[in-house]
Image 1: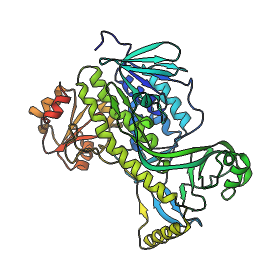
Image 2: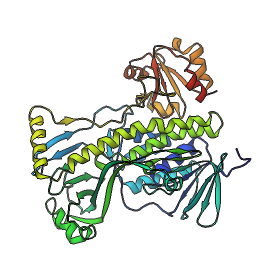
Image 3: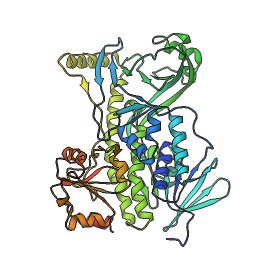
Length: 489
């Protein structure tokens, strides 16, 4: 390592993923600096949905309660035929591991502003309004050159700079194309006082003449998305008269003001590499997903949660640099699962061949008439087994409330070992985890913890700092060699 560097970690991009990562690192005492070419947040919403796992991350950085007051709980989503018969109903599961609602809608500028402020409150520093022009990995640190002629150095750099990532392009990293690319018109509305939303829940209208999506947002906003079809002029379709005509089947012309109408191309892409030496990618820089399941930003914030505790250990010389190699290995299966599901739903929704759509509708309506056509939440896959996930584990841990305090708040950013009784928290395995600062808890002293064990069908559960289950079994064991090498005392 160079004798001195300016920062432990430099994050390029101060959107929701970059600001979440900055807050998580600053919370752990990491010297983190964020660079963004813009001076302020984007003033209009892009993402509108997050799930219970993201709320759990926001809880960790201390802003979940206040943000929950500005969200609305998502009651579900229906897939409709062109004449608005229900093909498929999705309803969020009632109980969640985190204790937060399964699915919520939010206003992105509000979230982004609070995340930025919280990162700075926790100690992150920023350089705004200046673009990055060059990254040089010098082997023991990274030099970052800026457009104003200045430069900074860091032990590690994370590119959270979006779909057109400068960092990814500078590294020459290719994107794996999942062969989904569809242009859509996104229309954000501000409803007039007293006007009810056009729909009480999200709708996917599978109309081959014009696939359409409706998305509730916190009052007074509402979103429509219209797929462009052959012959559409992307410029003309954004014009006010055209937008009004497309909304006519759902609402009266004077019911709302158009806040934004813009054409976006929805992609399914995953970067071939998420790490090159001391430079890493996260969020849209590493993967892009169609919005049909509302998981684009969620996937990026999961990246931040996975990466934050690992970077903290590495920059503090507690763990070797090889710990960062588990980041892509763990996150890619998650992302492939969610992007694949979104692409699959997208292909279902985006069918424009009338004959194919008619057959789809007939099959799905028949399945619904036979008692099918109902699904719950689309959950992210468990982490696949590896050095930090034993076989059969990798699911998100339960978070009960103990004497009015959520479990994550009691544990903080540590590992946690939860056991049926204190007798199981003795011996070499328990001592091994205790030496690494883990919280050791038992379900006799704290009966609420039984839910953590019951969900894992185990008498002992080891939970990682990102709230995923590392190990579940009948005893606290010393991990195998690979984990011991990555998690020295």
